[in-house]
Amino acid sequence: MKFNEIRKMAKGLNIKTYHMKKIDVIRAIQRAEDNPECYGTQRVEHCREDFCLWRPDCVSQNNMFD
Image 1 (cartoon, rainbow, N blue to C red):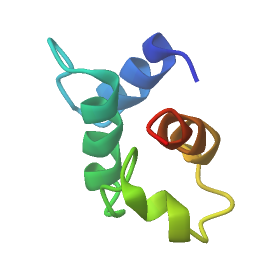
Image 2: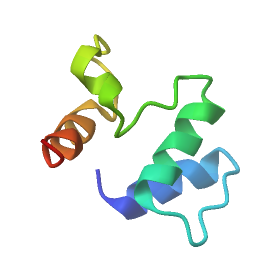
Image 3: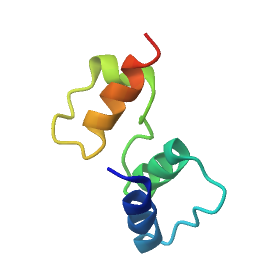
């Protein structure tokens, strides 16, 4: 998902994204939706959330650090 789309989603949840990095915006969205703030963490290695909106990007993000 493109960053502008993520920011638009955040705005819909009344999250101010000024000067925030993508990872922080996504975690703020997760927090606002009462989900674990797990995007870009090692949790992805054991994650069973196959329908998570962030999963494809999270997995690729995590693979960058291998």
